[in-house]
Each structure stands twice: as C-alpha cells, then as structure tokens.
Image 1 (cartoon, rainbow, N blue to C red):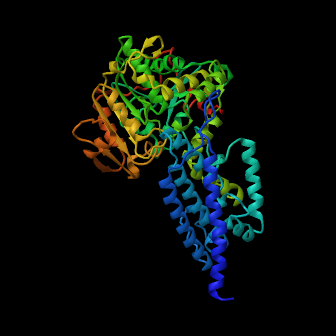
Image 2: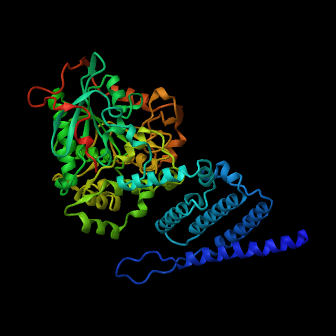
Image 3: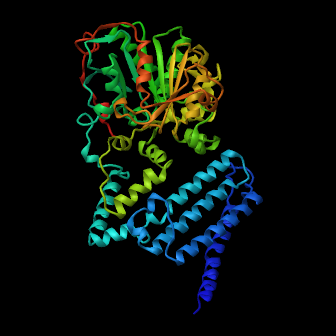
Length: 568
C-alpha cells in the first residue's frame, strides 16, 4: 500500500474521529439550558456566538489535523504535568490520548467562552466544563494511565494493592488524603507556640502566649482567625508561625480558638459570633492586661467578623481597638471570585430552608467545595497518586491543616450567605443590623492595615483592595504574591515571593490603578506589617510573668487547648 493511500485512510479516520467529536461537542452545548428558577418558564437553550464558533471550529480542525499527523509519526506532543511521566512519553497510544484530551479540553473551554449570556451564566458554564474536564482526564483512570500501568508492572501489582488499601482508608476517614496525616498531631508538631487557655465560653477559647522578650508593647495584640478553619494555620511550625513571629516582635499576643460546632451549637447566629466571640475576646484581653486599647487582626472570615464587631462597638460609642489588620478579608462583597458561581437567590433560599433555623453546615462539605475550586491540584492529583499509583502523599503541615475541617452553625451560615455574598449589605449604611446596632462602616475611623494575595481564588486581590474604598480611617494596603494561604504564611526568613506597596498613600478606585503607582519589593510582607503595627502598639513595658489575671482569668490548660482538638 502506498504512503499516499495510507494518508488517505488516515485522513478519513481523522474526519470520523475529530469531525464527529466537534459536532457532538457543539450539540451538547446547544442542548444546555441556563437553569431557570423553579416555577419559571422553560429556559432558553444556550446560544453560541457564530463568529467565535466558526473561528473555534477552524482552530480545532487545524490542531486536530496536526495532532493526527504527529501521532502517525509517534510524536504526539503533551505539555501538562498530569502526563509528564516516562510512561506517557514512551507509549504513543497514551501520548495521543492525552494530547487529544487536552485539545478537546481547550476546545470545550473555548465553547464556554463563546456562549452568548451574562457574565455570571458564562462563569457557571466555564466552572462546570472545568469540573467535567478535570474529572474526565485519562490520567484519572487506570485503564488509560500509562504511568500507573508502568508502576504496576514494575512493582508486580503491589502498587495496585497499596492503592486499594489507600482507597479503603480514605473511605473510612471520609476524605481524600492530601498528606500523611498520621505524622501530625496538634500540640505536638503543629500549633506548638507556648501558651495557655485563659478564658473559654461555648464558642471559643482564648489563648494567651508566653512572651519571648523581656518587654512587650503596652497594647496587647488579638488575632481573630476564620471560624471556617482552625486557628493553627497561623501557628503551623516555629519557622512559619505568624503567632510566634508576633510574640518574638514583642507583642503580648492572644488568639481566638473557635470551637468546632456540634449539634448543641446548631442554632448559633452571626450575632453570637460577633457579640459572644470577637467582642467578648476584646473585652477579656482588656480585662487581663488592663489596657485601654488593644490591636487586633482578622484573617479571612475572621476579618469579616472583626469588622462587624468593631462597627457594633463604634455604634455603641466604644473604641477599644487602636488599629485593625485585615488579611485576605471580604468587607465589600462586590467581587467574590469563583465562589460567585454558587450564589443566587435560589441557592440561598435553599440553604435558609435547610438550616436557617438550626442545624450544621458540615465541615467536610465545605472542605470539598474549596478543594474542587482547584480540582486538578487538590482532588484528582491525590486520586491518581493515592489510588492508581499506591503512593503515600508526603508530609505537609499546611495540607494536614487543610484536611482538619470544621462545621458551621446553620443559622450563621445562611445569614452570612444572604447578607454578605448575595446582597452585600455591609457596605450599605444602615441596611444591616448586627447585635442590635445599625451598621455603618463610616464609623470605623481607626487605622487599618489591609492585605490581599495576588493569586487568591477565595478572596480576590481586587476584593481585598475594595476595603480601602469603604473604610474611612488612615489605611495601608499591601499586596503579596501567591494565594489565599501561601501568600499570608510567608515568613521573612524564607526569603520567598514578593509584595507590592504604594508609597504615596493614595487609594484610587481600582486595584489596577493602585498598582500603577506601586513598587514591588522582594520577600515577605511581614516585616512591613510589623513596623506598621509597632507604630500603633504604644510604649514597651515589662513582660507579664504569669498567664491570665487573678482567679477570674487563670490558666485553664496549656495551649493549644481542647477546642482545636475537636473533629468535625
């Protein structure tokens, strides 16, 4: 048979495989509907931009033809870490399947971008396509994963047996293992900064840390972490602990350790977390130290709780906090990033009916949601490694913390969704009532330090920057590199990443405008924040010799306390 006839047959096969695939992909998109609300008229099928569709089809067929030609020569090129192993490179069939998958994934994402609809609908379609394509990668299936097959042959099936053991273990524990959790223990090798529990109520324990300096600043320092996670993200290891760093810088440091709610806390509300949580913690720190004012820091949801607490106190004519730091915090919820795909009136109503009067939002459900925001990195990567290859994931303190999920009271969660994510009521003066007080951010005249992470997918840097537009006091905004956690947990000694500061103190309307006048600085933003915080910390006084104060606030137990040990 001549080479020309071989090519003719190959071309026919190409048309059958890729032409049919293109037609089916377009038909699938056209059959989608945009999700009409319950009781509404039937939704209109998805419409695709004809111009974009034509350009995408042309590109698809050109790339598919080039791929087919490469595959005939055994040179299908794959540039994706999921298919980077020698098993893929040495197996032409596997390499072709991976390359074809990537071509189809790019095309489907192009189809998603060609949808003629509002931006939120397009974002939802993109999100759905991303999830589907991540799940359907050939690397996720033993029958197609050349690297896993190669390892199975080399280990004489031991990797498959180990993978089954890993699968059974994860089914029993209820989540995919991201690290070897048996190597970590809270209080032993994470959350080890020395301190004591000096107060507790049904919502939180207050931890006071032992000073590491002979003198401390007269204004104590309180950290309010997110209640959606456990506080020890701020105290993983001695060399990356923000808590230990604050203590070593001479701050008399206290931390809120939220309780992991069970059914007994199933009726707790947002008001409870503000009044009996953040405000109570501020009052106890004042009572223990005798300070007229303290400094406070809120991280993520903890920052939103702190902003509410400070606004409630301002409405009451009280100013117990001299300065506030907000790390990757949403105050203005105009831009909520990828999480916006979940939020609409129907979703919020469903959650209100489900748990608005009581119940728990399960921690594992929350953890799964956040993991699937980055499915390749935080889900399928571990499915392949743990189950198909029979590997034990390496020890990593941050991923151990990430797997240590916490529940949320249903009324708290439902109220939070409606008033912040859906209606953005906090930035509307007088619209919201919290703890009996009308909320007005215009009353928060205290100085603030606002931090956002450039690649944050939970609190976009633009959303963190938006706080500069609604907080009227003197402000400092800093943007760091990396994401929601890695950007925050970036100790100076590591010499990693960089941060941006604008020296003129101006805050134009958008982050892009702010960046035009900002300067990039190498390394951690912690040193800049520390210098700023010391400017609000007052004079130095002798460090306390004991925990708590008198019989009312005595040491109950060593840090990190019981509450952080409770599992969801």
